Length: 278
Image (cartoon, rainbow, N blue to C red; front, side):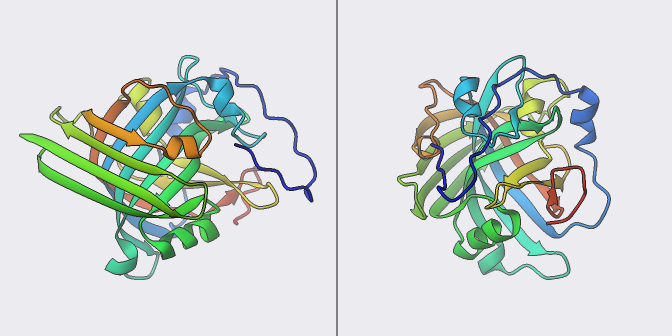
């Protein structure tokens, strides 16, 4: 699902997926807090990471030509991540409940730029706050959508935590894009270890986005490692991946849960090595 603008110069064809290795040191370096001051603060809570292995060629065609898929042992993954954002606020300002607390669901994959700086590419981010979605598009150049969403959590991770997420995109298109997932968490907390698939999928601290003229930007976040727990999906119905042009396999996802992390968000920069802020 790639749209073109007849008034724009034609772009280079997408790069073929390659298993270009990213050094372990580079993966760990991106987890360290960047210099400078954050532009926003927020908390991410009740995160459910769902992942499927998908054909690399199919994903690469959906990416900007300047980005390459980040592969784990030659395999490409797509993620569906529902969670709750709380206390979202710009630096220097207080949080307001009506604006700062809302649910979100994103569809994502993993990329790198010229063999370095592994990060996340978002196909979509559905948010249950129209103002937040608009600001996400404006400030971070991310494909935010306004959606009606809910989350019900019952029990505890000690005795068994039961989670029920629901999301229905309201606007803009493409639609339909909905998610219904029920999951259960009983496993102990075990942060991901470097070099594992769990670390590859969850411990991501850099995002990429593009402007209307095709310029590539990158943004950093910083937080403690996720307190990951293995989860079990009891039921799943979704069309969010298909709305992004991704035909996922009809198999159970790899599922992990994290209670939450407090996050510092840093400003966008052009991904050209210039360090120029957006």
